[in-house]
Length: 165
Image (tube, rainbow, N blue to C red; front, top):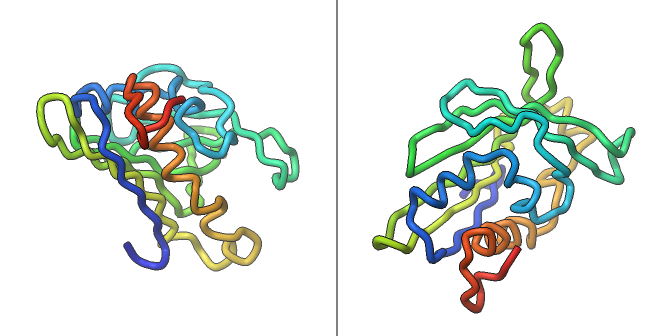
């Protein structure tokens, strides 16, 4: 991908529909996250459509408050092939302000019980004002592969290299 995005891919031993269902469950996101920053889902309903907003509690030692909450807006919803969301802040009154970055999972069925999963973090649309005080990507190179290994573990894929949650 371009210089304003990073991706990682892992083949998991699970059908694409099963993988998609886990990714569409906000309560699974803390267990998938490879940084440990995602603490838990505030909105627990499964993701079902573009435009849906779900909030998660976060923690980052470099954040001014340590604990904080983000609001994610689903911008890709194509079961069982792709799901993605923009991350931002809930400004009240139903107004979401995106930081300009998004997360996206692309699923490629490779057989009845095997799926290629590509996780992408893209910050192409982050404005200069945010780039002046945040480094992108805000995590190390191990984050995306680690997240995919956590996902594989949730799916019960215990093969060497797939890892576990």
